Length: 479
View 1: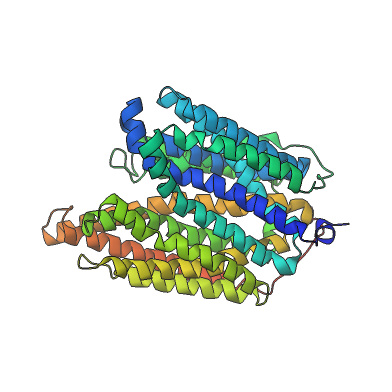
View 2: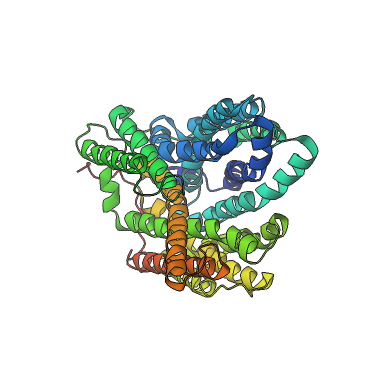
């Protein structure tokens, strides 16, 4: 009997609350650290390497998501989820005890491994206990947890920093994590492990090294200290592509591959992943550029800029469950495409930004972007998980999280590259300084035009996914 048939009572809502709490906690930690970076830099005397506190967590989380998804299919989702919380909580404790930058980065890597286990398993656990016609609504509440974590992080971080020091932003995870482990142990149902428990070590290593080196190159590319033509950047990107090519080559031949490539033959899955990465690239670019626009161009202080930026996560937290609910009533093909069209409209409106805008000019446009993305995200994930065979649902869940992280990292690089390039060209053509308001605004406007184009491409992909499918049999043999 499948998990969908077993868990039809109110217990499934307790499972949802438990998973949403874990998602909130992991998302909160990824956003709470950013506001503490200046304080940590001063206390630990880290110099210009401070970004590694954020980068190490992001790289490890992104590069191990697929591995954790495969392990959850092999060993059971509950085991990996509980282990993830334990690792995350332990990593948080030692982050607070860090004595220098190297130790803090090392313990952030531990945190990242735990977060990957949580992110890779959450949607799959929810999908296991909710029937296909209710998954959209359930995943919508997971989207609300993500938005709540993102919006709460800076606020909670500021309070903790002001009253208890930078260590407190990590220590707060310890009691919360212990409660979460207890609730997960009591509430989450056991999942049936895969019959094939062989682990694809070569494939895991190819993927790990490929994603890590590629993302490091993409992260360093826009930096003024390097640039896209710097030998280090080119070497990292080329190395990453070589390893990922080797990963695909190996997965086609491995006796027990980490990733069944035939999963991409399922149209609903491949379209959902492609649409997601397009949307999240645009989100990454927006998240990078918007704070600079608010502070450099409109001259808001960081606190007021933060409150203005809350419009996006708050709108998303409301729209996500609505989008999920609608996707259980309306074809995901239509509701997710409609959502992306709304988001594209928001980006088009943002592309007219100028130095005369007031706070409300930004708020309603960012709210429009998030409204559409809330309608898109949950139905899109539900579409992929409904179509994925049960033995591969952990991998499908981790792929969705992977595409989100991958898109955000690439989006930051796209936003920075487009902004700087267009700004410099404008300054050269008009004989003004590259840091002048007109040059800066011209570059930012182009970023939002690119965002709108990316999201429109995602909308086309979303619409072409065809009719929704729901399967529970294993995928065909890997090809």
